[in-house]
Length: 500
Image (tube, rainbow, N blue to C red; front, side, top):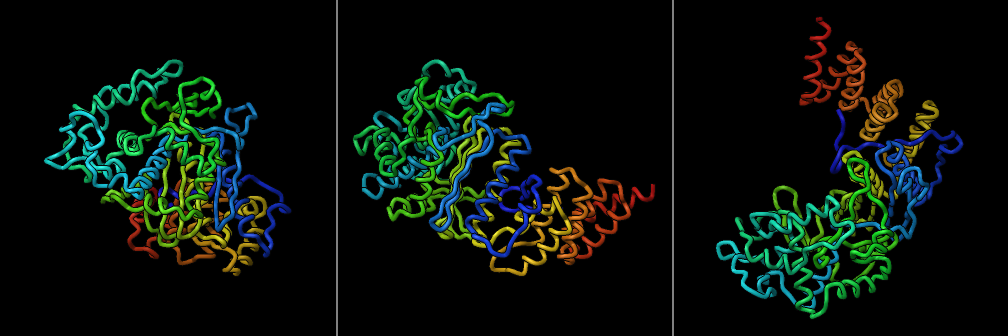
């Protein structure tokens, strides 16, 4: 039975064979150097699966940073990403509008409970539900209460942008057009009660900031970027020169995706940035004493579907080990990016890939979760991942090292789940059933009371039609965990097969 960790199935990344000399582990380790090398291994081995062109990664832990690039932006071109590579960061753009809104609250320019119609010119009597108006807080938390996510003309424009209709011509829709459409939209739920992710809220936040500061949003944003020394971050315009500088992104069909153009103000998406610039934002979140950080990461909304929002930050929460965390992801037509910040544990990470297929997203999410696990456990190092090349090259040597090094509890972390995941990696990625069986047998020797390992070994024997051994292992799994419905199901199936 496969073990679920964090958001998705925890998969130990595929590492290439290396020589014994390279993989031999000593008892003396530098934790940050070791975790950085593991980051390299994880990223390189996601690339080997063939779903993703290139990866950019940055980590922060206790004042130290590391970043690196992997793969080629465009296949067979040798154009590896660099510090000057410009990426569409899509919805990560929203957190800048959120932070500027937090500043406006601290500056007493706005309040979270302000009716947004205070800042709109014209008749917007429709922007309420049963006497409850849309507020600034509702804009920041994607809880506007609109019956439709987008007005019809705006929806049609977004569809055309996504298809690439405006790649070589201006977009014939602007913020004034959106304001006109907002006069006829309807609400079918009380604002502030139902989460519905959208672009309208952040754009209205940007518009509101223009009103209260009497300054274009682009200028307000630029001032903030200047304060963070983010010199290579800007809103994408329609100029061909800017677009040509962008990293190509690839869609589900492995074709170059249209650029993520925004013809509105720029509160929702449209920012372009480099990895080093995003690292400055990451460091700012963890090292600056600016009060807008604490304000912008306050929980403003949460529901029973695990939607938790700050000022356009998403997925705020309290982890059992890591403490408070918050994050933001961005998905354009061909670029997937994400930023995670954990102030209580003093770590953060950024991962960007230039593919948005389902398989690529799974690679991105696996890498995201794998790196986070190592940062949570830091300064302890993932012993299973560290020894994986040795498990591939010399299984006997790897077992000896594992048993020796696991005694050093202050230096390494390890558990049955990590070995279980490695077994599935041998099975699914290396396509080596014999090695997978050997790994699960070793894991059972180490953790004889772990029913999940017997379940996993039973699965391999079942798929290879070794039904007697499969039955033996599933029965052990069920004995150790009488609630194991998966083992019960397979026992019945195997018994049918043996009767036939």
